[in-house]
Length: 231
Image 1 (cartoon, rainbow, N blue to C red):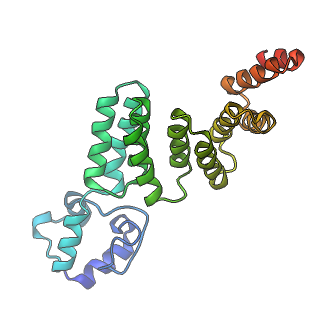
Image 2 (image 1 turned 120 degrees about the vertical axis):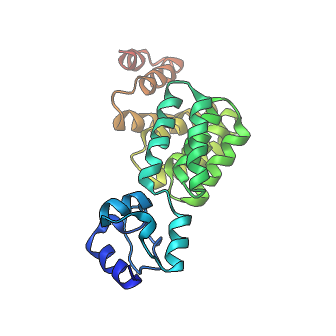
């Protein structure tokens, strides 16, 4: 199959088109990653070993043999494992993703979250920084960076990180909540209330937010508002 023939087939069948910018040799772009040779075989109805690609295409396929679809399974499994507390297995899955794609911002973020759960703040920060470097609009990674600073009681830098997350995603309830706690710990109570109230507005079923609001009002001896939030 000639390069021209393969290009025509790729244009006809978008299942063969690569990740954005990945198929420069073909001159086409798409949202999905390059399929494996076995997938090509099923689409073209000929054995993969008989496909005769130009050298540039062969190298491109070899370098990008695993597409985003292939990586969804270990990434999703890793997230589930982390949520169930099986951190070693979760990290193994995120490592698997990163072995294939060293520019997978979400995998760095998820692995950083596991390190944060383990209170391994140095590794957590390194992974969050890597995720942000790859995706400067990764709001969750900025929130994670803030969580590391919060754990280290560096509330000024935590507030900066949470503010960046909110700038990227103005509806990020958790970032408002976290920034509110940071401001509370700096005795910036009025600002803390603004953040916590916004978090409550965005996530009206989040019990932790209302509990934090109730604690502040109780400390201020505003018992009626405290009772309302506890309720």
